[in-house]
Length: 503
Image (cartoon, rainbow, N blue to C red; front, top):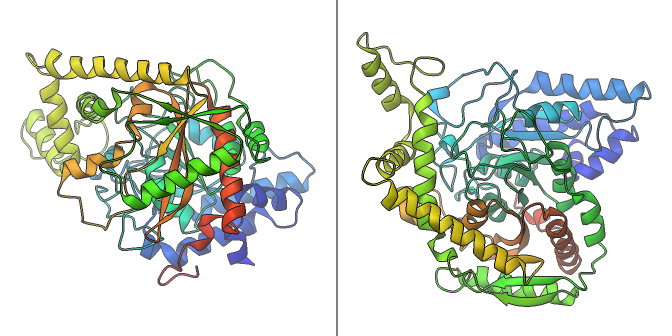
């Protein structure tokens, strides 16, 4: 029974819990047992909150037994939280030694909304340090492994959240997406990942990487589960000055509409610049098949051109390090986190602490950003990158005038071997080729599984205008339903057994 519970979707688990067929405690314990069985191999979690999770689940059971309506459609369902959101009752490290063991004095808005919804937080997941990376190899606490092939990466920076889903350690997870850190791991692990419109999910309590790009979002094994979670964590937050004061798009309703399998009247834009050279042949073949599937569902395919997308990578890797340089200045050994006390001046303590506490990729980006912002170079680098950002936003606006959504492969390749690119920053950065434009423009996108290439998962990226999540979810749900019908079930059911686990 325990293993069966870990294979159910969040929606299925919620139905069983709310009908009292199973208790929330049973469901939480099943997932904690699964974590104990396989996480030594996967290393998705940095902290497992066993006692807190069981206590939270027990509160849901008591409330339901008393006849109280569920706090949300997901009350009692377990979730894995990326370790970049502050939590009162658990350490928050952002994958860095500089915050090793730090316990924040407050909850992030996302965490408080999860608790208010009765969702059971199982623990905190591994990530690239301060969300800088595409493989979760830059975590100060060791790499996470892909459950499809434990010699390969699960993507990054949110590889822990995605791997926890693919390893059936949690049915739901939260990630953050600065340049693809939700969508790329989703593609690599055969799961669903959503990057909402910038400002659609509160950033209060999200440890900043690049403040104009960071966005929290839902991770799940089905599009419906992602939508249900999106409606829990989304919405305006007065504590976040960038939060959009608009209602959450009706994404669950859109998923139910999409699941009927009719996309008649919808125009799907195929981005000319997102394909060809640099894309693995199997990834390209999977995308071409996805286009045929969308046509079968009634969608009209329209080729669109976004000529400035090719400059997105260069612009992003100037804007992001510049904001990193500014944001990470707060880790100064004076207020919280690691302190290497040399007994010398404050400046020397700060330098020794940052040298010991930050990893190589974080240091690389701080140096790049500080240089790009320095006198004499600001206009040539950071200023020019911001102009490119504007051009990319205009490309999106023109493309969305011709199509309701845009589609592309989520990533140029499938998951690569651990260690393969860790010493080659440019090769690592190229993983974000297809995902970065959405972050630069602040628009919405999701990744949904689109089959296998060479035995590894591939993702289809669906992009929508700002606050256009409803149509994006509709297309994702319709494609998912058609793909599952053709394949005889969800792709995630094909994850191989994990050595040492009960998969």
